[in-house]
Every structure is written in C-alpha cells, then in structure tokens.
Length: 158
Image (cartoon, rainbow, N blue to C red):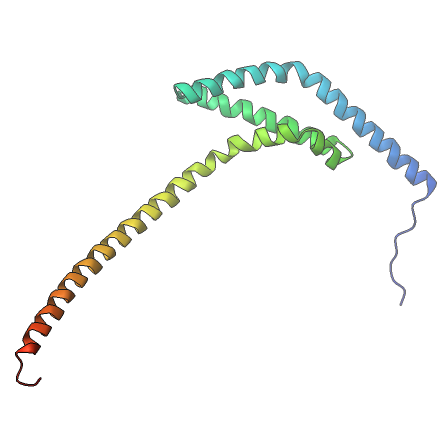
C-alpha cells in the first residue's frame, strides 16, 4: 500500500504563497494606517478613564465605556494578528500592546482572588479555633498532669 504524500511545492505555488503573504502584509499595513488616528484618540480617552478609575472610581456608564474601548483595542489587535502573514514577528513588534490589553482582563481575576482569599480567611479562622482549643487542652492537660503527680506522691501504690 502506498502512503499519501504531499506534492512538493513547485515554483508556481511558492510564488503564489509569497504573493499572498505580500497582499496580507499590505492589508495589515493599510488597517494599521487607517486606524492609527482613531486608536490614538481612544487611547487618550482610555488614559483619562484609567486616571479617573484610580483616583475616584468609575460610574457604571464610564465603566462600560472603559470596557468598550478596551474591546476595540483587543479587536484591532486580533484583526491585525489574523491578517498579518508572519505572526511571531508581529507579536514581537506589538508585545507592549498585547501586555497592555491583557492587564485589564486580569482585573476579572481579582474576583476569583477575592473569593479565594475569603476561603483562606475562613481557613485561617479554623486554624485559630483549633489552635485555641489546642492551647486550652494543653492547659487542662498540664493541670491533669500536675494533679496526677500531686496525687501520685501521696499514693499508697508508689
């Protein structure tokens, strides 16, 4: 039985692949240029919202606006990433943008950390209760030992 093999890339397929890569690269550049000004404006609005969030907190409306702007930035990054033919070089050039977009998503994990912290607090309270009970038992055990040694000195069996 013969095995299925892929035909080797011919010069024509190599050329068409390179042409497609060039077109994808040109499209990514056009997208980047078209969105440069609107995204710059949105970044300043987002910066203002960040300062407000850190100083006074956000109202529900401004919080939704903050998440909507963040979503637009994520969408731009994803579209450019999908369109670009060479993914790794794109991520190397845009690593700071990717990190800046991941950090706000990490805020969601604060809720999980808070729940976990509450569980740890509950566990710490349990440890405290057990520790107090243990100290109480040691105290009562010491009094038992003291009472036993005091009675054993006067015991007729010693």
